[in-house]
Amino acid sequence: MIHSINGKTKVLAVIGNPIEHSLSPQIHNTLCKELGLNYVYVPFKVETAFLEEAVKGFKAAGMLGFNVTIPHKQNIMPYLDEITPEAELMEAVNTVKISEGRLIGYNTDGIGFIRSLKANDVDVKEKKVVIIGAGGASRGIAVKMALEGAAEIIILNRTLEKAQEISHVINSKIKKIAKADHMNQEILFHYANNCDIFINTTPIGMYPHENDCPIEDMNFLTENTVVCDLIYNPKKTVFLKKAEEKGCKIINGWGMLLYQAIEAFEIWTGITVNKGIIDLLYNIN
Ligand code: ATR
Image 1 (cartoon, rainbow, N blue to C red):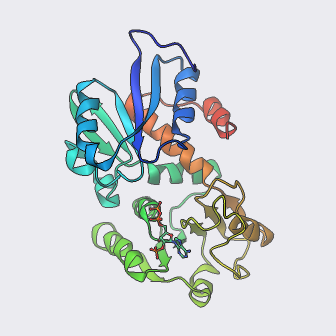
Image 2 (cartoon, rainbow, N blue to C red):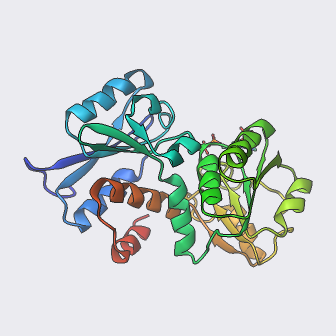
Image 3 (cartoon, helix red, strand yellow):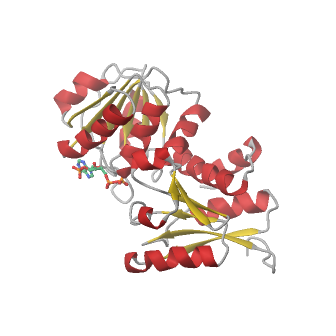
């Protein structure tokens, strides 16, 4: 038992499928404990067919809010009363706040990534960014970096259409700064050898395939590029190891996971989580 539960305990949750391996309960229950809040955060495995009923149940039960993960980040949108413009652009909701009976959808993945860059003294303003992969995570961070003032965002992906979809959203709804292209060695050299921030959003190199790397030859990198991987298991992927060998500053995905959780917690509670607690959370993994 993380902390005692009584008649006044308020409930937070995460819904997804599968959900067994989620680290969110550990992060949020540590936050509740450290802040002395009588809240508990629990995982719910919800089948897509029962998503609407689950959401109605959460509201009926007077819950404060919940996180949403795979495969429900898009499916949930029709069941909400309000969605932030940012989550609309990202076409995904990972956090719902229940306020006066209204369900409000947010997306904290993009801001989570920005806060993890900031924690490493990296600012995105006026920067040239290259992203490989064009799934949901790529879209969230690409949109947020465009909103935060990146100078240029290049999305490279095996399936060109998916990269084009993200660049189109950015160019038509935010600013004309995005480009999409195929992901191959020649194109990578062209775009990434002088970029400021280079990010892997593909799952290549993730446990249990930790010997894999999305890019064979990373010699195009110079030490002026900050290299990020959204993967946090292993802590240092082959992608990050190769970048480190080139003298680049490297950032793994643990900070993004933590800060998207902290941001969600701050939305639900109105509390600003202090640095001492953030440092403690950094080390629970
Ligand atoms: P998420 O939504 O969590 O970001 P995802 O939807 O699985 O994850 O997206 C992962 C991205 O990694 C996709 O853009 C995918 O490329 P495709 O759009 O061509 O499917 C990319 N990806 C996954 N495995 C890959 C591989 N073996 N080689 C190249 N790209 C890969």
